[in-house]
Amino acid sequence: MACERLKQKIHDTLSNGYFNDKKDYVDVSDGDDNLVHIIVVSRKFNGYTMKGRGDIIWQELFDHLSTEEWGNVTLSIGMMPEEVRFCY
Image 1 (cartoon, rainbow, N blue to C red):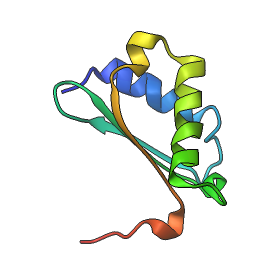
Image 2: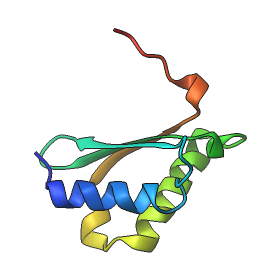
Image 3: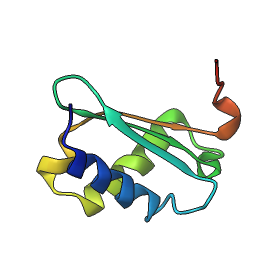
Image 4: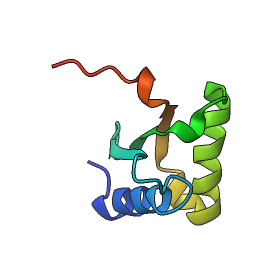
């Protein structure tokens, strides 16, 4: 399980920074071996490729976290709301 303090800091960094719209969704969860996965759902990704979306997320992390902190992130995915499918 990844450090809860770090997961909260990553969440706050993204949701209080570039992804601060009330309709933006940021999820930070446990990955393998105490590492972190991030999923961001936002209309701000409109017109961006998957690489461009990842670049936006990573730039926020690089700008606001230490190398050690963002070094714990092993997966980041940026999606538009219409790309999300919920299965129950």
